[in-house]
Amino acid sequence: MAKNANLGAAKNAKNDEFYTQYADIQKEVNAYIEYNPDVFRGKTILLPCDDPEWSNFTKFFAQNFEFFGLKKLISTSYAIESKKYKTDWQPTLFETENPLYNVEKSRIKGKIFTLTHDTNNSGRIDIDDLQWSYLEGDGDFRSAEVTTLRDEADIIITNPPFSLFREFLAWIMEGKKQCLVIGNMNAITYKEVFPLIKNNELWLGVSSGSKTYITISGGIQTMGNTCWFTNIDHGRRHEPLKLMTMSDNLRFNKKMRGLTSYIHYDNYDAIEVPHVELIPCDYEGKMGVPVSFLDKYNPDQFEIIGLTANSETMDTPVQLGSAFMKDYREQGGTGHFSDNMYGVCYYDQEGNAKVPYGRIIIRKKQ
Ligand SMILES: C[S@@+](CC[C@H](N)C(=O)[O-])C[C@H]1O[C@@H](n2cnc3c(N)ncnc32)[C@H](O)[C@@H]1O
Image 1 (cartoon, helix red, strand yellow):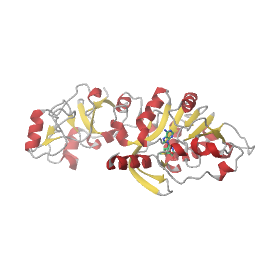
Image 2: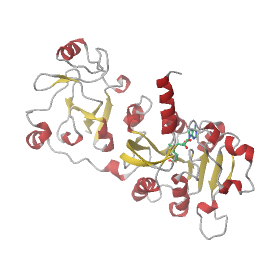
Image 3: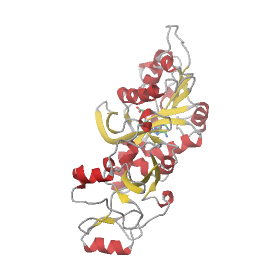
């Protein structure tokens, strides 16, 4: 393997091993409960990348088992030997002092933890009532064993390994399950993900942006670009975005200084809206907006036409074209663009050829 490929693989392996904080799970999940207090009632939840030794997902749902009215909580973990990131891991006393402990299985098998009732007669159902055993396999979510658990569950919730995010989401969709999962914001533009968002089969959760995670060594690391992906309804997506008229934006918003009208794309019939707050409330045509719009997207207010870089999602796929690219290069443009690259482009008020970064085309709901 080349040195860069090695470094990339090591980075990916490390990126798969960081853990979600309890408060972040609580904040997100509570928003769904506020919108629908019975959202989890009578449901089986599967946490398929979650060892309770590490995972706050298991702790959070076990502690709230009764309050949420869950039927069953299943949490599975991935065998230490199968993890790409190698550590000097040792089994905990919880495992070694348990009669089920098996020194051979400990490193190579996944584990399953289930919660259904008060097993220790404490008078309440909580994390101490989790029952566990080794899985037949290593706990890979793609295995037939964990897929059977997926099929038994109503809802899949976790922060999955980032390097397998596409596969993980496809696995959930294949099972036609409800989900609440953490991913990188860039996943919005994946060819496997954007069509789901466009068709309102998947949307962003309530809280996105910079969050801190627990690293494998127990430290705290900020990751600026993560968000929740879900197909469970929540209140934020029914709040209309508060917007001003086109003429008020042009008159009062500093970001529109020097413009007398919104810029129209050169290669597509839509206006360029460089910031979400500048979306005019009174424009009936198509608009190109930054991807961050999805964080504010209310499907009752707007429809999504497509992602300009993904020709299959667009009504009319558009490429930059040779005439535009000639102007762009002659003006000294050095971006990694080419004639047949898909995307919108425009000339600004000084006549400079511009290619805006990642645009989604939207239109006001009629
Ligand atoms: C980003 S971490 C998050 C862990 C936990 N869900 C949390 O949020 O704290 C992803 C976990 O998935 C595990 N994992 C990696 N590949 C897996 C696979 N194919 N199947 C199941 N789990 C896997 C990793 O070892 C890691 O523990």
